[in-house]
Image (cartoon, rainbow over all chains, first blue to last red; front, side):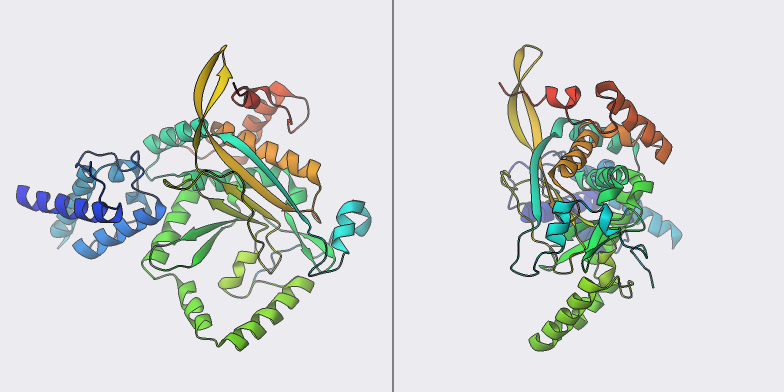
Length: 89
Length: 316
């Protein structure tokens, strides 16, 4: 489980770093919004990346500062959604 | 099918002389009926309001959402600007609708998003609609993308013919809205949010006007910048954001533009007038709160010299 979470974090970090032109100081706790790494276009790219990579469908209510503030928070969102999907099926 | 404009135009005798001069002037190549105003608003106020809202609301609200709501509120308070030119006449819009220019990274297109009756919506409602639309556009599931694809297939000469015919009809007749793409005409204002990280300082901005003339007003919020002001007997750093408003002189004059910009600045400098605690404010609450702000400084409905607003603008 821990490995799976780390993998999600790594993939998210890779995507953000690539989109943010290899932002050096990125950690799971970096505030993406405060660091100016997420504008609305980048946010949409990130949502689409999450949807395509993990087969999820996010709603506007998933786009909150709580969920998108850090990579660690995003990883928690994905993890909880994947768990929901598993339980439903 | 929707009819965005009222059936009767503004009577000629009600239009001020100088607006009529532009209204009846030669068309293309004639005088330029554009007035612009560049001012500054407090980014600190906007930023702290958004932080507070984002800690309470279930979804993210951004400067774009606040800007749409503030423009709608200002238009509601200045209905004389919620109109457009059709032929040589002025016609009122039936509702306060606001258009925001958006983009996606998947194409190079500008996608205007129309928020209808934006003056009756909370910021959370506006955010919900915009995120939904932006998700649709990014997922390529928005229906208007099919319309664009169809248009992209038209050869240049057909496209030119179609657009010129449409332009002429729209210029001279109060047309109904019949398709997904032309519903953007159902608003007198286009809003741009250029507050994204990395945007250069904005010292001036001259937006173009759509050929169809529906966009009487353009409002652009530029990126925040630091400034030192003299406040409480000491120099203090504050953050401000440039606010540019362009308007059509056939609709109003510089004084009326100043009043509109003043209302818009007041709302952006005190955004809490738009919302209390999470619950969307009713139109009456907004009226009361904006009224309270105005009452403190002036007995006119719209203050032109607002002590609260000006205090942070005194430069060192």
